[in-house]
Image (cartoon, rainbow, N blue to C red):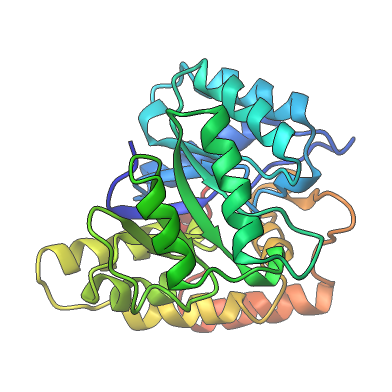
Length: 294
C-alpha cells in the first residue's frame, strides 16, 4: 500500500532491438530504492509506458511480483484504451497489486469532467477492489483535473480514489481532502508540499535525485534544518530545461550504456545539449558516481 514518501516514476531500460529490458528496468528501480526512495512506479509517462507492449508489461509485472522489494513497487497503466486498462489491471491484481497510478485517456483533446468521471467510474465498476491514484498532467493528457472534479470522484468512490499525482500543479497547494494522498510531480515542490500537508512526491527526476530528495523528506519529518533543498530544486530546474526522458537517459548513459536506447519517436539529447547538461550538473556539485543509480 502506498503511503507518505518520495517516489520515482521509474525509467524503462530498452534493448538495442527496442524491446523492454525487464531485468535492467527492475534493477534500476531497485538501486534507486536502495539509494533512498520509498518506492518506484513502473509504467508511468517517464517509463515510456504508452510505447511499451502489453505483453512486455505483463512479463515485468509477473517478475516483480516475487521480488524482495515487491512492497515498494507500484504500477501505472499507460494505456488510453479503457478495455486495455481493465485488462492490465486485472492481470496485475492476480499478483496482488492493488494501487494504480492512472491518467485519463490522452490524444483526444477537449475532455470534459463528465467524460473523465465516466472513465474512472467504468474502471471501478469493472474492478471494484481497485485503489486509484489520479494522475493530473494536462501537458500529456490534455485534461486538467479541477478540485471539484476530484472531490466528486472521491465523494462517489471514497474506497477507490485514494490520491493524486499533481503534475499540473494546480491542486497540491489547495486541495486538502481527508485520508487523501497528494503528491506533487516534482521534487522541486517536495518541501513546499510537505509544509502544506502533502504526502511527498512522485517524480521523474528522483530516478537520479533519490538521495537528495530523501534527505529533504527526512529532514522535514525530523524538523531538522534543510541543507539540501536549494540544491535539489536547482537540479530539477536544470533537467526541466530539456525533454525529461531524453535528459535522464542521456545522463544515466554516462555510466551505463543501456540507457542510450529509447523508444521512437523519443531520442537522446544532442551531444551539445548533453555536454551542456553535464556542465550545469557539475557546477551544482551533483555529477558524482553515487548519484548514477543504474
